[in-house]
Image (tube, rainbow, N blue to C red; front, top):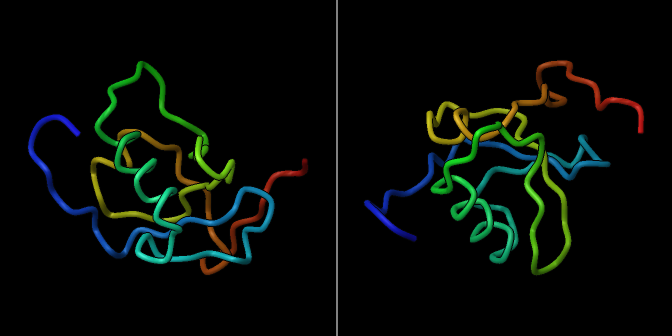
Length: 90
């Protein structure tokens, strides 16, 4: 990762794209997905991402909650189960 290395806020939560009830804190992500999240945060894209796709294991994650400005600048936040959010119909 280029630039200043800083830890992601531990209170960020994500949920598997098709299982919003299985929400986890960022520290609970598989190592490959955590690495992919960190890579996505440092990349600067024109658009915010709807989900994180891990190129290693193929998992898709949606950010459900975060107070980390870097996460919020890069990802669209989906309401998680704790805030009564619903996963859009597939």
